[in-house]
Length: 338
Ligand SMILES: NC(=O)c1ccc[n+]([C@@H]2O[C@H](COP(=O)([O-])OP(=O)(O)OC[C@H]3O[C@@H](n4cnc5c(N)ncnc54)[C@H](OP(=O)(O)O)[C@@H]3O)[C@@H](O)[C@H]2O)c1
Image (cartoon, rainbow, N blue to C red; front, side, top):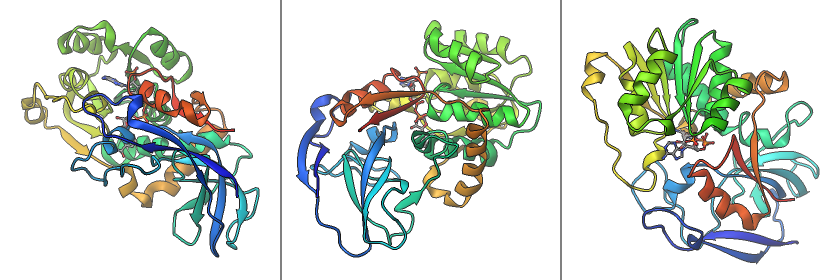
């Protein structure tokens, strides 16, 4: 069996996460037992939720254990199989974690999923046609419930979730406005992702200024908001929400280092009769097949052309992850392992 480079969570962050929280080690790969499969990871997915799990705090999921391989989504190929469900050469996605290889119990429901790479590249199964894409789908379809002609806004607009959100909302006949960090991201949003407009929040000193810019980009107000960030950006959009607007609260990345992230105008929830609903995509597995079908078709037909930022080699994972938390990624952040 191959030796296996792994990245462990070594220490918990205090405030911002740093490279020193991680440790690179080499481990032996155990021999396969009946029902098990050896997977070689081609891509590792880096996702903002991993930052929350590095803390030992109350959350919807258990914290990442110290001294254990960092958990995370992976896409790769089966090298060896002692399960009738998989054969060598199958392309698969799973939760293999920050390591080159994983031994997976293929009998465990949902542990490993075969994917077809004929029309959709393997890496997209970690992004637009994977967990981030389904996240956008759930928030839009099940919480915001858009109607054609309505205006949708999404923050972290050019990321893995935001870019899928744009394609899904455009397919439903909506006006879609993004909020992203920097002119390059905003240019990409309108030129390639189909956004009708994109605002660079870094050009605005406060929520009032961003809100004024939003009023110009959303002349009919905002009917649906997909929130990825929190803080000043959320305040600005809340000021532009129409009566009976819906907010899908997906993430609050501006507060993931633990700083308080106050909401400045909660009275707007009452005055505008808003629905605000948080959600965790893994708690809605019933929608995944329908969502993945639509997302797969959008990518295969070129209607969604998601970009990726790809770091090379497992050792690059910590820096790439820290970069993701600072907005250095354009589109889905991956690590390529082979
Ligand atoms: N609820 C769920 O089940 C679920 C599932 C998946 C993801 N999520 C959440 O969805 C959000 C997007 O995830 P993703 O995977 O698509 O990541 P992503 O958007 O590809 O990358 C994160 C982006 O967040 C933005 N950002 C970082 N720090 C920020 C700050 N202080 N203020 C404003 N923006 C900041 C950056 O974009 P800019 O340069 O544009 O600022 C960065 O590129 C995250 O909040 C994540 O936690 C939730």
